Image (tube, rainbow, N blue to C red; front, side, top):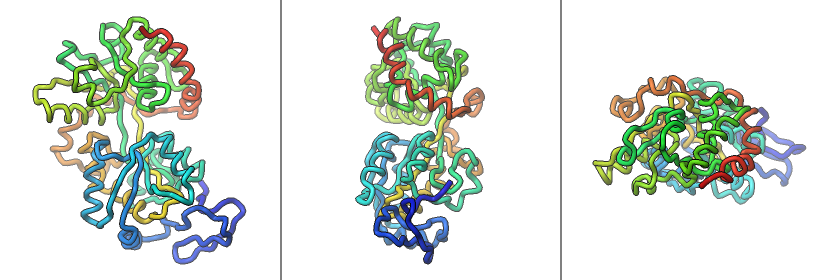
Length: 366
């Protein structure tokens, strides 16, 4: 894919790792990070002195530890504004030359969109060869750092037998909390997982819509947010969440109440896996700090930090400490889970999903 450092039609001259534009119309950050050594990036990052991220809050996948270590090691201060993947792309694009943000963490499908929109800055990192080809853009405009899997989290104080499959949900009398499928990636992945369980796939989500319609008709569908606060208050019987959110929420709740009883499991008959990728703002005023942050995220230390936050690191050559492994679900639970196999078909399905969800599910809710 072509690097987008300058607007089309403008010329550029490579000087000492920088792309120097010959027109004042150029708006992109004019630095070729891939031409610089880690040592050069590190020194310049220290001069940047700070980094502002979006969608990378302390409580999500243990980002807090990574940001603390970056500040302690390099003296780079950090702040985050939490927002959705779509909002991250919008702020990068809308702020343009007045960029206040440097790096974001977006859902897997949003990485290529950001690159296509020309709002990313490429950086491969020194861990390039350890990252699967499917998990990165060819120039490093986006790189997946970790991934999650759809799981059920069940409040065993409210439900005697925790479901382990979508079929269990259908056959039982559970109330299922799924969130807003019309807009939320996590909830949409739950729909796709259910579709797979009942014979559908990325191009055929009707089985999933039919499943949720049945729950809606029976008064067993909760479309509210599956938040840690609601779980802790006992407002949710069963919710569908990414594994790192489910395990993280359970851990948070048990810190406040050691007697809390939540079970987390991967549905045996349909569980989509999906990654989250970092994108560096193509207009950033602190490109070196952003590049160093991505470098650290993909380092052994950064990958272990993500695992501490219950996420699955993208690099399989990182040896996780035994105490970190023990916090994750057993590998055998993931044997029937899979990544999206036809992204184009899924993207097309999502285009009309808000309307389909409203007409075929919400309309029948009691």
